[in-house]
Length: 510
Image 1 (cartoon, rainbow, N blue to C red):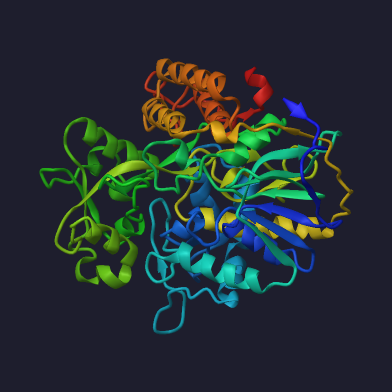
Image 2 (cartoon, rainbow, N blue to C red):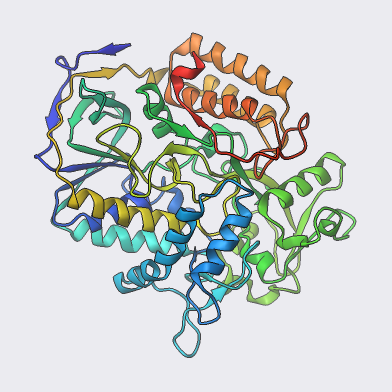
């Protein structure tokens, strides 16, 4: 239900200001690049704890060596995306990648370098060459976010609205977006009116019971955008990281793909390698192939493990400190022990449909980072392209906003969001159902069952953002009657000869 906002506390941001919802890499990079334009960053977190960017282990992929080229990087990206990558976007991002990485280095990101001072580049799955720039082994995300936060906190044009969480978008009465409705932990509501609103809230892993993402990553931007009519793209494509460390934690710690790039192998409980039975590329096959292979081994009762003893061994503590600490905290010494692994939701290729500068289908609304669907990832994201996309589109959106004549937008209405109704029992029911029916392997019967469950939860508590986002994912998965990339249908195991992205609005589901 849309209501007037006259009874709400409201704050009108200065003319020409930008409201950024989210403080991950995409949002912070955009905020810095918008200088000197006033920017207000809305975030519920005072640190990197709730940012999925800070959890990224592998690094940033870009053509950074003399042997590499943007054309090769774009070609690998298109191949991994299984027919749905927009080639123009892939080439654009690959062409800008190296300069963006050098930009981060100039800001102070301490990328790993060799004795000659050159960037140390690692090989990851489905890349034809080593091109992933890392930071202190497997701490790229955390180190990059720390640098971004330092610069953002020192920037005079950026103001942090800390301790607030966006839950609805404000409508301007003419089909556009005029800011966001935010809530503090104590329930206080504030309507923040802005001429430009940028969604940079991250992904959807918290909608599933097994994920490597923060549990707060529940598709809020997707729910907010969907109910006001924004076009969403490729919602069914969810990437499952094949090697989450299976030690019973929520969220599950991640064993970075770089380990397999360094030569780690996948073995079953009998210490036998199994990936060659599933793909000629073995351990370096695309993520969806590896995830389904590991899932099949689990279903067959052959517990899968990652064997890093020879490939990394004694170098673990300083080359992969995050993985090492996670394992040791569970009593596993990866220098001498096998690491138990299982697939977990890791990245969402779908999201708010945008153009090549981050504009959504609604005037005044942009989306960048994982919550956006730019056409770069297609059906399956190439490893370490996520942080690259965040900085490329953060920069492009900033440049476009700074060059545009921004009309003044005044809020006239807001859709009520039943935020507090998403209690533990509803969240647990949703997460369990999404994992069971919309996980690594899907079927029409399971997806129809899932939609019934979600509709029942909506009837029970209202159109909460996580429920709307889940409904869009499930509906997209049901409509795609083929198997492609991260989407596998047991009842439609083959790819359709006609590959095309899916575009969906919430009204089409009514």
